[in-house]
Every structure is written in structure tokens, then in C-alpha cells.
Image 1 (tube, one colour):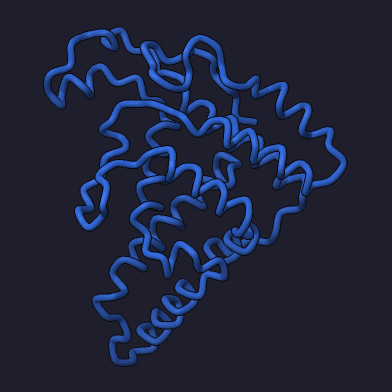
Image 2 (cartoon, one colour; image 1 turned 30 degrees about the vertical axis):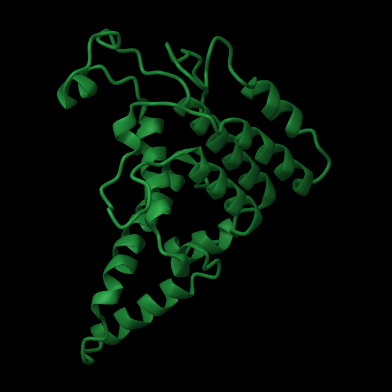
Length: 224
């Protein structure tokens, strides 16, 4: 299981001030005792929700897609993502579509949820950096003084990619857009007239991103 770290962020305006907002090991232990998988999912959702007010180096949550109405990701995107994931996303279907792997049973899924909760918790703690309290004037100063963990960097990417995804991909829980893309790829391999158009550029890039994310899940035993 992913191990939570407890070096708390300093000078933080939100999570975490002086004590962790939840005792993650105790939470996991208590939730695992619940009688049904559905009740466990509700318990884990509440713990993910409690981690919504996070803070890290601002540059991690800025993106350059100027078609968006806002130029940075906020906890609003995090809440929307976990709510959609718990309510709508079939992780086994997603795993089968992108990796062609067999389904996980409830016990395996629960272990991955636990690992993912620890992963998100680690996003709220700081990387030890001897330069953390130095004056920040330039972008190089910000990079030198950063306290962001590997988890922070990955989670910021996940949130930015989710924020910029169009509705026909974000809310397609059967992954019909992926099936359509794969069918076009089959036609192209058969030497048919190029079936791809400029509209397929984002879906192709998003497929590459999600495939990479799913492979990371397999390596780290997560379920993003």
C-alpha cells in the first residue's frame, strides 16, 4: 500500500495547518470493516472529499489553454472529478478499454482505492527543501523553493487534463469516443482513405494521456 507521509506544509492558508485533516491510516482501517462494498465506497468518497482544500506551488495548477474561462485549477475541479469518478466511472470498463486487462474484484479495487487515498493525502504534505523559505522573485526562484511532492505534480496534471477535456469525452462513461478512434485506426491500417480529421487531434492526444495514466495505475496499484 502507498504510505502516507506526515511532514506538513508550512505557512499554508488551507490544508494542512498544524494537524492532518484526517488520520488516514485509522480511516482506512475503519472503512475496511464496513459490511458492504457500496458502504465502503461511500466512506472512501467522504475521505477523498475532506482532502479537497489543498495548496502547493501555484505554477503546478496553471495551464496555458486560453480557451478556458479560468487560468488555474481549483478545488472545484478536484471535487467534480472525485464525484464523477465515484458516481459514474466504471474503473474495470476503463481498464479494459485502455489496457485490455480483465476486471478487478471488489477486494482488489478497494486496495487500489486505499492506495489512491494515500497518494492524494501525500499531495497535501511538503517535500523537504532547504530553500523553501527563501525569497521568491522569479520563476527560477519558485522552482528552487518548491515543496511539491511527486504526488502533487501528478495530481496537478490529472486535474488540468480533466479541466480541459471537452464534454463529449469527459462525460462519455462508455468510452464511445475511444471506440470511434480505434475503428478509424483500424481503417487506416487497412490502407483505407485517411479517416482522421483535425477534430481527432485532441482525442488522439487524450487517448495517449489516459493510456499512460492507466499504465501508471498498474505500476503503483492506483485507480485514477
